Amino acid sequence: MALPIGTVPTPLEHKPLISLVVVALFAALSLLLAVGMIRALVNNLRQGNAARAALAERMQAAPLHQALSTFGHDARDYLYGEPLTRVERHLRVCEACTDHARCRALLSQGADCSAFDFCPNREALCGAERAAA
Image 1 (cartoon, rainbow, N blue to C red):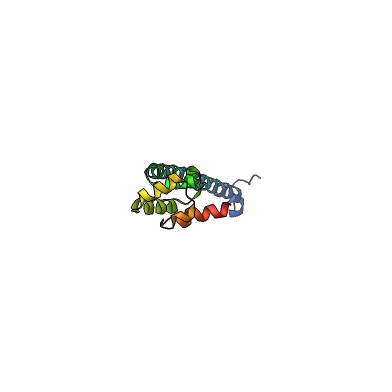
Image 2 (image 1 turned 120 degrees about the vertical axis):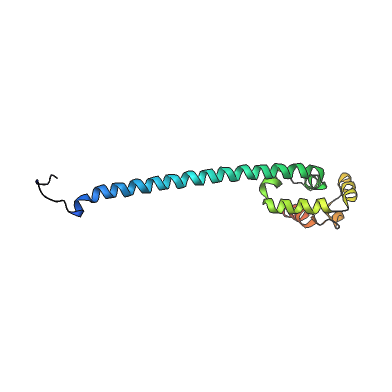
């Protein structure tokens, strides 16, 4: 729509341009937000995998790894299926335990959960075993 020469446009005639600018700004901000969220997710996954790898190394030295296997749990499923805080707590409790020799002996004999009444992680290990049965 052409305006006659010397006519001043009203604010309504600039509305399409303003709308376009607002839409472009909104699209740019949405894109920045999406990129930021993707970067945060990727970073979170990397940190989680690094933490799980460190816990897996520690778990190899503790009886917890053998106990998981004995009671029918896959260590990898346990590491990736349980919250990291819970895995860390179970591992810390296992590492601090003074009955490693007794635990390893019972595990090598294939003892069932009832023999592990001394184990502070018994409920976590055996409770899951009962739920699976």
